[in-house]
Length: 271
Image 1 (cartoon, rainbow, N blue to C red):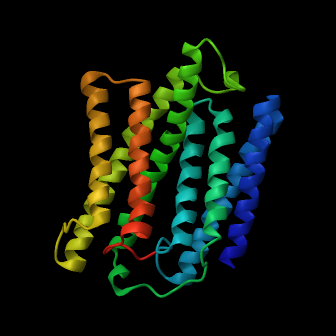
Image 2: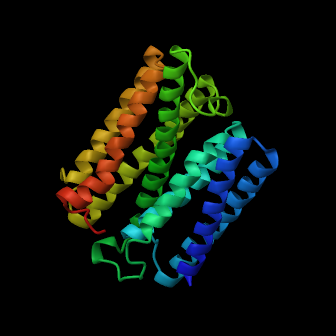
């Protein structure tokens, strides 16, 4: 049943993505409004899918690749809805919503059946650690997309050119402001995710830190964003420097999440 709800959410996300793409081309407010309502419908249907799966499984559904990609996409969609309340960033929907849709399509490549939890995952720390970690990763994913747009836009401005539909996208100041907000929210979530993971490891394995590959790469990612925040507040980094480090930080997140699971392995390879 939860998979059928999942497909309904995917349909609404695709409809929203298409609407935002049409809005980008034709700049029709009615089309943008349709995209927004489709996104709202997709988010709440998706949330219902996750909740229904939780009731079926009896545990937080973030324990395999299907569930992880689904929950990651849900967090991205939710944070984008939050940003839309503060910034005029409707045009970014043509980038964020296709990305969310692709994540859900990717999730369908993995088994969606509910499997028994490994003993080590049967812990109250599972929902705490995973939720904070995924929220932080989702926020930094949005900043990753924003940073790419910032770099392209700034480069074209310096060349006194404009990329396709550039007038529809937010100003450099707005993009930089979004990056700062992502930094302000994403870093605490990431930090709490690492701390709760360490506490959980202490209970599960008797050691709070064992330099497992995923732990090591999580620390590397944290250091990248810590340097970024320090330089932003102490030195006044803005614009391009922030964008490049945001991209570097998210590449580290990608390796932590996917590279470790598929290439290295370790204590955290449950997916």
